[in-house]
Length: 103
Image (cartoon, rainbow, N blue to C red):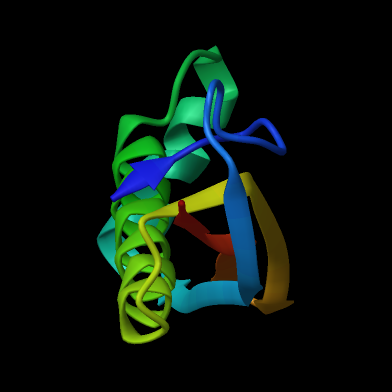
């Protein structure tokens, strides 16, 4: 499955099948929160949060691709990611785009 952030497939004629999305709400655990709090005192990357968000993006992307495959798509164009805090200690990551069939 091709995933493109641009709104076309270069050199191909496409048929739009519809919007597809995938999302996940990921929570932090106490150990990560404690270590993140310590890290804010000295600065720098909070690797456990980076890893958590990378995992969440991978799950959201897989769910988006699963929706596209169910429509018979060959690619998803205009792929965009977003995130938001849902509640204290939890964040949503969403991936969305347009499923297309390459002619």
